Image (tube, rainbow, N blue to C red):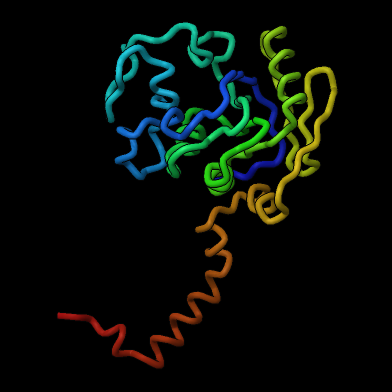
Length: 215
């Protein structure tokens, strides 16, 4: 998992509340567990005029030109702002996979669904909850300024606007440490690799029949 320390990125405004995980990545794309390749189908029903299918070439699909991610001014955006209760609905880790694969590193909203919120941290995304007033300010400033970017400093837990205004956000200390060091569940486990190998060696010595080759 990529470490997250300081990130500055173009903002894409998704002016919707209660964005559920099926809207983020529709159910027909949940067959793969590779974690990659989902970016082209992020917000599939909002981005395209037709119904997408797994492994489909999306390059020639008809676009909904008014959707934010199809607008040239938001190309390359890595910070997404949305309204309350982002990531609600069914539990699917594919939702943060799709956001990450598309190129987003930060999601800012007034509130998040709990399971989606937790899954973001496990996959290197930083979900930030700001007040509705602060999020509204970001929407307004972003609409007025093309190329609107935000700087997010995880160490100081601040979001800085182009004007220099700063908003602070809360983050659990354990999750913060994991993101700063790029540690997912596997990475955390591998920190104890020496202890695990030592246990395996002792176990093999004490109970060799458990490790005997089966013919």
